[in-house]
Image (cartoon, rainbow, N blue to C red; front, side, top):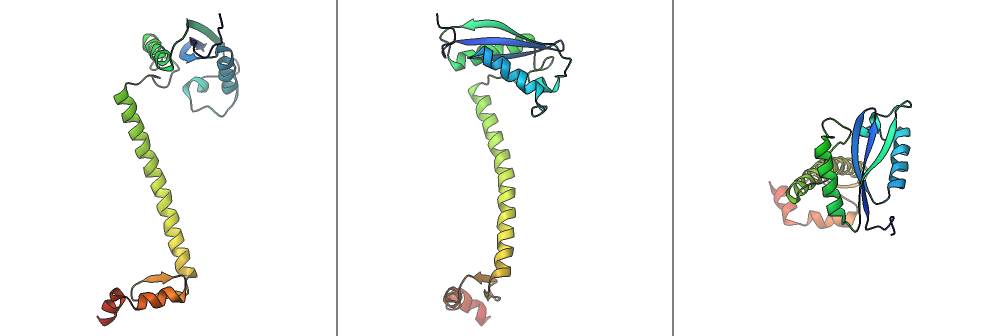
Length: 171
C-alpha cells in the first residue's frame, strides 16, 4: 500500500494551548513541519492558529482519519464536518470553514473581487491623476480654450482645425 499516494488524504487536529485546529492534507509529515515553521515565524501572526503560539506552547499534531482515493472535494467536505463537530471556528483555532457550497463560494468570490476592484480602482485613479498633472506640466502644446494638452505641434494644429474647437472659438 502506497500511503503517500497523492489520491490519499488525512484529517488531522492540532492541539495548541488546549484549543483545537482541524485540517486536511495529502502529506501529513510535510504539513506538520509547515505548521511548526509558521508557528515559530512571526510572519503569520494574523492567523488564529499561529497567533496562539508561544515558545512554551504544547503543540500536538494528531491524525484523525485516513482516506484512500479521495478527491479534494470530498476531503475538504470531511474536514468541514470535523470543524463543525469540534466547533473549532468559534471555540478553537480554525478561522473559517474550509468547505463552502457553490452559492457561498460564488458569493465570497464576488465579494473578494469587489473589494479588489475598489482597492485597485482607487490606485489606478491616483496614478491617472498624477499622470495628467505631469502631462500638463510637461506639455508645451496646449489649447487653453478647450483645456487640452498635446504631445506635438502637429496634434495641436489638427485640433485647432476641428469643428469642436471652431465652435468654442466662435462663442
